[in-house]
Image 1 (cartoon, one colour):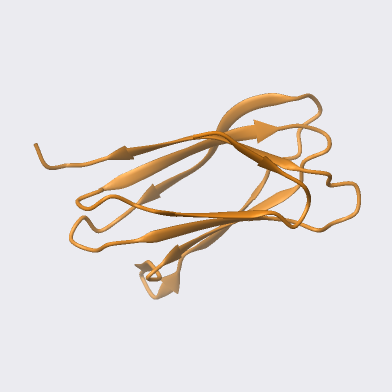
Image 2 (image 1 turned 90 degrees about the vertical axis):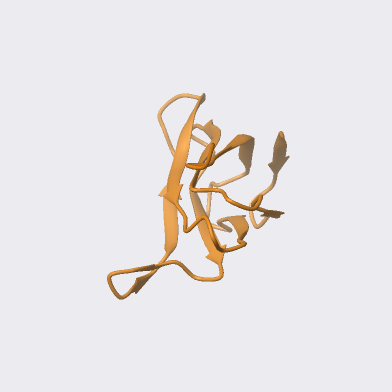
Length: 104
């Protein structure tokens, strides 16, 4: 999977059944800003719902891990990544998502 977009862009994808955790990799760089990752249904970690905002701004362009998300394998999830409309943030890049299962 590779996706790129301007500020305000978003991508939504279904997480395969029996997924225990996912790793999301994308582009970071000086023109990138916050990327909000939301899982549906909401993950509940000790009373807190999961919505993670990752700052993809770096001094130079690179690819790297944006998030590592632990999931309940008996639930079906949808993930949404949305970019910021902030000043100076002109885009974002999603390179790949890896799905892991604890089941063999």
